Image (cartoon, rainbow, N blue to C red; front, side, top):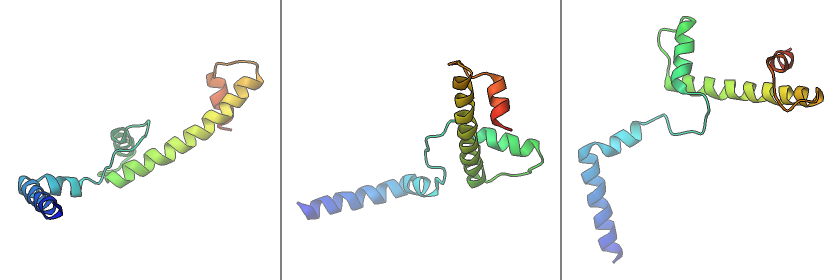
Length: 99
């Protein structure tokens, strides 16, 4: 039974490799991540300020950094809104949180 399983897996692996599926999976550097900001927006942002080309790693790192900064600002803004007796975060809270 184990030998049959190995033969089947070997066959499938070779078959998928022939079709190009294995190389596509190996070459896919952008693994799915749980982010809010899209990587494509990071490329647009960097190109807007002068970048000619942007690597996938750079896009993902910028997403990571900006989301971390956004979370910190958001937490401060929420505390400010609560301190003011509000449940709604307003632009003034965000502005104050960035100081």
